[in-house]
Image (cartoon, rainbow, N blue to C red; front, side, top):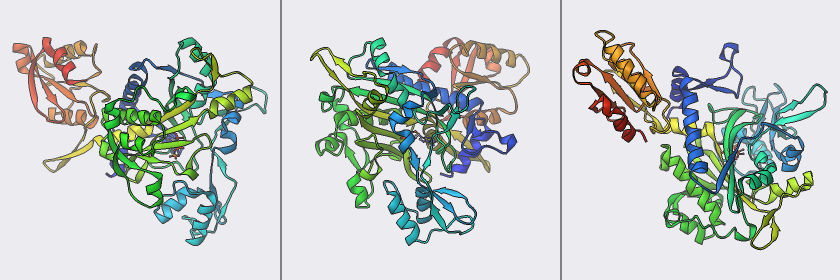
Length: 494
Ligand code: ATP
């Protein structure tokens, strides 16, 4: 799939495009347009429903973007949220060392240490891609965006690089206010900021993006028992790339969750549960299962807080890359915040009358990467009379507009009738009224943004109060009475 086609569609149709274009753009920042903001909201709502509203062991929060700077000391971000940096000794341009090696040698660098990267740069005589100057390793680069708070200088604060920490700092308050007992989860979605060295690949790597995260808290003595794991979860089969197979340079293979657990490849049933729940959601919103796999982090790749991490990866045009990370954060974060804030964040187990620090499994999704995979998997082209027509075959639950409404002609009262249909339906569905250009052009415009159904008001409507409803994917048309439209559309639009 040529990603340029997606980028061009996104700009042409107001989905997603570079920020500040009139000033020559600002690398790593993007704006959602008229259709994009609807699409974004639909994806967020779908995620929130699947992971929060449909579960009684989950609650959500909406925390601040700038938080107390001590939080980032406690979490380890100030010390370790770094990327390896190399600089050209001639032109002084800076590059992320692992990305440069990956690009130049066309190999996966997941889990390689800085020493290993140094070795590869020396062995393969990798030079500055711009002017072939010698490369030199610089101080690792911290990805946190700094800002200052208030009128006095020196009050440094940071924009959050992940939403997770505000969940940990609020753990006690939320546990009390929600009266949830272990196991339970706290979810949050919102902006995160990382000063990426080289933002790239459209919205895959940006400096401002949205995350959808869950911190799922489990009794430390019950981490090996997940009461939600059903037969359906155990029978679930997916593409799996284990760390052992990565070391043997093998590719992924199809495996069932029950085998991953019995062979102790995935260590805890809770981890397996969240892998399947994530996969199910991705499938629900129209991402093709064959384009997804889970990949185990190598020991050398694990973040400082994680004992086990599986990434859900998508087969992007530039290779298999992370879409979501699912980490076992153990009790690391709560312990750190207890130490730094000197606040008791223990959970009191009423059954055993003991205080425990819960363990945490964290499914962490990127919203922009999810939107990008949806666009890649739903994009299709059809040739019609030497013209290429683009169709986004979006799942109706996330399409920005659900129903397009057209009068066949602007005259003879057809516009007025079509506007009445629009007024009626917009109470229930996001609709768009369009009377400009030929019917063919209007269908094409609706197809391009993934509108699942298009209604045409024609001369028969004036006689028998019926309209045609055209299905985007099959292009088949049905004649439906206006007073039966709600029922008809509700069945079609899930
Ligand atoms: P990567 O290795 O690609 O830099 P990461 O491992 O640092 O990603 P996490 O910290 O696990 O990413 O963040 C969780 C999710 O947030 C990722 O799976 C991804 O979808 C999203 N994400 C992280 N960084 C970015 C970014 N710079 N731009 C867009 N999305 C991002």
